[in-house]
Length: 241
Ligand SMILES: [Fe+2]
View 1 (tube, protein in one colour):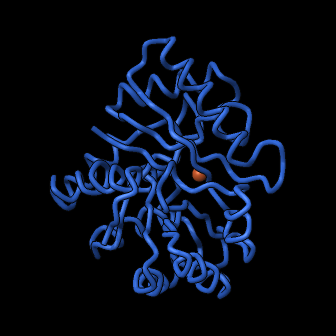
View 2 (cartoon, rainbow, N blue to C red):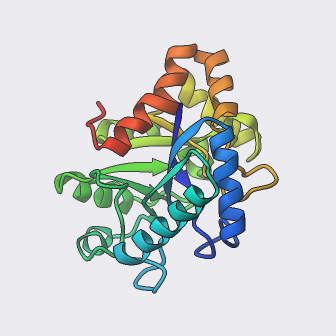
């Protein structure tokens, strides 16, 4: 059984599922792929009517009703993919930015090209407030691809690292794939997720594809750890080392 902590399954809120039909199709694909629970992580749109705890909870409850009506064995819980900005701790306190479910984990996204120094400070502030940041797909960041020591600094700080399954498959190009393989070899990945956006094409829910590649590289134990045990602990709010 897989647990997917990064998935753009909520309809019409960001660049993920276009409408409820596509959401349900993504739910169906997730269930077929042995994913039991996915965290809905729409991109955070500050202070809009598409962000905030009440709004996201309502959408999650709607999608779960539709999933049940369609008799799909799959559950969605609330979350958000949050841009790293220096007021993140304030938008969390205001319940405009969301943590993952009832846990103290938060999914955060760095800029794709640069990796400004304020990121360490911002994430450090969250850690001081007992909120554990999970950095989404660092292997896709251009600066990290050129300077992999950034990853060690983040790990030393206590930041968790989430790699996309598609990065192992090569969906985002050679440099991203090499960075993902380097991270796997170094044992510095904490969790793998689909970052699925659609019901067709390459960005569909696909945990098993990632599992197979990790299993070939690092063995079954590591594959289970990254796709099942660790994401399950994150959802449950259990502490990861
Ligand atoms: Fe995402």
